[in-house]
Image (cartoon, rainbow over all chains, first blue to last red; front, side):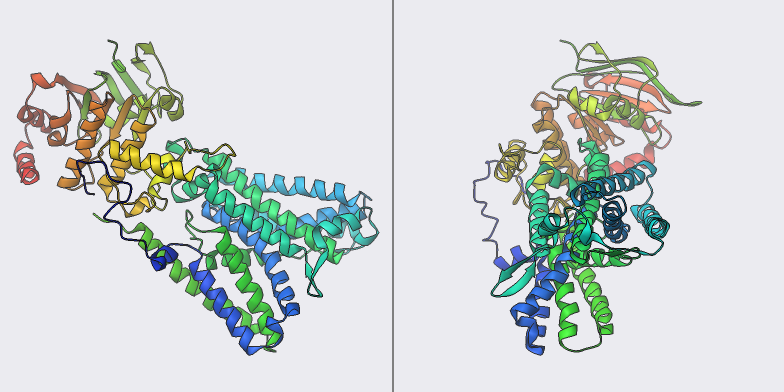
Amino acid sequence: MTVTATAPSAADERLGKPRAMDQLIKRPEIGAMLGALLVFLFFSVVTEQFLSVGGAATWLDDASMLGIMAVAVAMLMIGGEFDLSAGVMTASTALVTALLATQLGLNVWLALLVSLAFALAVGALNGWLVMRTGLPSFIVTLGSFLALQGLNLGVTRLVTGSVQVSGMREAAGYESAGFLFASTFQIGGTSFYVSIIWWVLFTVIASTVLMRTRFGNWIFAIGGAAQSSRAVGVPVVRSKILLFMTTAFAAWLVGSINILRYASVQANQGIGLEFQYIIAAVIGGCLLTGGFGSAVGAAIGALIFGMARQGIVYAGWNSDWFQLFLGVMLLAAVLVNNMLRRRAERVRR
Amino acid sequence: MTSLIETENIGKTYGSVIALSDVSTVVNAGEVTCVLGDNGAGKSTLIKILAGVHQHDQGSFRVEGEEIKFSSPREALDHGIATVYQDLAVVPLMSVWRNFFLGSEPTTKFGFLDRKKGKEVTKKALSDMGIDLRDVEQPVGTLSGGERQCVAIARAVHFGAKVLILDEPTAALGVKQAGVVLKYVAQARDRGLGVVLITHNPHHAYPVGNRFLLLKRGRALGSYEKSEIDIGELTRQMAGGAELEALEHELRGVEA
């Protein structure tokens, strides 16, 4: 620290003009942006359909369903927690909606509302358990992951006698709810799913909350140093519970999109997706240790997923290669993130 | 003038362990009360009572003349008692200004963060304390340990603390850095705050302190005004005589 007698002038002479490159490298999503650009260019050159409007509609849709969840999971990770039950939750919420609408004959809108209440309750329970017990969220949500998986299969089989709920099309309110969650819109004669708009909207809102609100400031703080945050009056418990509820809300959104698009749902859906969400968030620049990351980055991470998964199909390769790509991508992202964090945490003594 | 904080024969037991017993001291506005003692002397227990983390079970604790028992750190904060802990001061990955305003963020009338105001006020508050940072957007983790303490002190001062409790602010610092932090302690004192400085280093306490409370094994070994004691005596009392030679040797190293 340099201590001077005079008050500093507005423009500090010790600060050179910030170089664009230096500014860029500080952003958590920069690695993901470069990765996305590479993947995009690669498949644009290698395949024909990838760059077409129809191709874009396909990989954007793939990315959007993953992206909505990845953004919510990224917020939770910045807040210092994991949610392994996020993947199964997308199936649970769809099942609740479907069972209520088809078995009890509820209006789809009402079923969606009950399903939302269910999701928020599970999210709150996850958060409350983590905060109350002080156990790692990894373990607590692993428990709720398994419990939900069991409930999904058990209840579905008990009620319908099979592991699938279908027949949503006959339910009242399916058309109007479907318009909101599962319709398509036209650009240049090609249909795009409305889920893409939800994804963009969710990302914009999440990013605004993170960067421009008090709550966003608290999310970074509780993930970076929960004790210090508590000491200056940040409501740590309430904030973390809210984050778990946000993840549950996103799972409800994705579950609703799924059930209204396909009109049926498998009870074993969503298993394994939780890791894809975390991977997308990490590729997007989130630290596994919390306190650092970005919502836009997670959305781009999901975009990389979508582009690579569909690009491999267009290239006519076996989809087995996707896993290899994923592993390499994840390792590269973690290494880049680690380097960035060390820069940020570098202590001058 | 009533004192900001006054304790009279205050004490605290954890089960059968007597952590603190019969400690009396006073903190006045514009003065520094130093609490000295070795590890396990009861320094932490005393400040935790003052900061509202623990409650005393003997004696009386008055804040501005009013008998009080805090139930939480938040309540102590509401009475103008801010505590800066040695290792809990800041969130390393967040920028200086975001740290500065953490928990008391400025917002625009639409409820969004007022980032411009946040940065300006942080820069101004820090420079008012004589702390001149290059860039309030840099992560706090890139600052040195001393600078981080300074940011935490400036934050407490800015948000209207009347009493500033500093828990071993110089413990992990080099000689020069410790000097800088002590300068800001004096700075806060001159602005009319009452400061409680916890340390085990008499050479850090003596230059800025007005009053010295020595603790040993949970009891007050002595309480002196600056006029009543010199640094040699303070050191001798702390060391208990026996380890004096080794300590003097160590201190000579510090002075050099």
